[in-house]
Image (cartoon, rainbow, N blue to C red; front, top):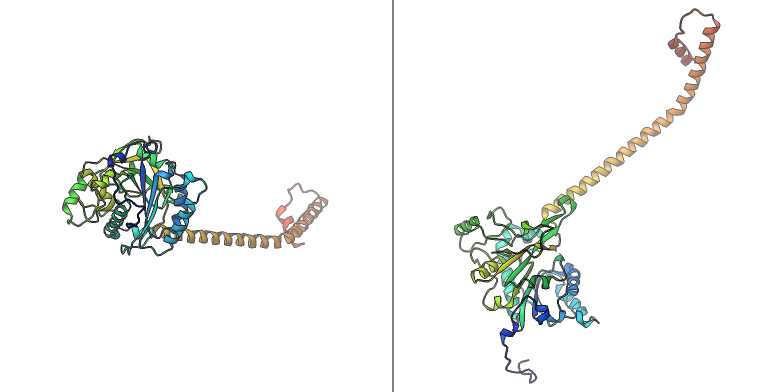
Length: 389
């Protein structure tokens, strides 16, 4: 392409023309929409449904995907969805430039919930993810991008106005709160992303005690930091515009000004102040003087993925349900046998009852005929005689 005479050999960009503002949609500011993917086929339909619903002008959104270490058909399925997306008869629904990059990083950790979120996997996993993010950013960021938006593919519910909503705060780095729905037996809902937090004295003391290559990860008893988490400060009825300063951030949904990355901030693939990847990125941005903000009452919803413990509990619940159904079946069978046995003797009892009553009447009659003694008749004797026939 460099030898193509139609491509100018000298291009001039004045980066002042691409500054990020609170009203990017009205000023024509371009967003680089970055999506790392791994074994993502199950989430593709949901993800592209969200993409089509975005209210930010689609022609101002450039998409870049990194497919890495996938064992499923993510790459081919991604191609199919993108071709359909760009073939939309409504040209306003088509996006700007689209790039797909493929590179493996040797990620051996499984994609199951417990694999990805197990404590032992966190340090190595976060460092590999940081490398992937930096690689994608370095090849996709163009001079005319004003904003960079990072998004995970497995988000279940998100406002279609999320880009404008986050952008309106005009912060260097901003993230929403991230929760996830749960089955009724687990409580209906739960904070998902605990990587967005404010630093604490306990956290700083813990960092001083760890080896230089250690990475603190939130939400695990091994690292008790007592930090205020963005997730736990949510009020379902709170103002979604309320802001909270953060030191660490999660990576499910991040909007940042492109200038943040151009000035050198990145996702540490090493221990930076005892943190890596997105949490290390938050720390680095704070160190560089950038604003890092979270919105405690503005919530997006991650999908529910059952952990190993959840699966075990669901198996136990299924076994309990089978046991209760078997108990109910046996109870109904016993009741049926009891009723059938009672029906067998009922007819005989009715016949005997008639004989008893008939003979009882005869006994009373004989007593009266025998002359009144002035004594009450012996009912027991009459009944006994009636039964004997």
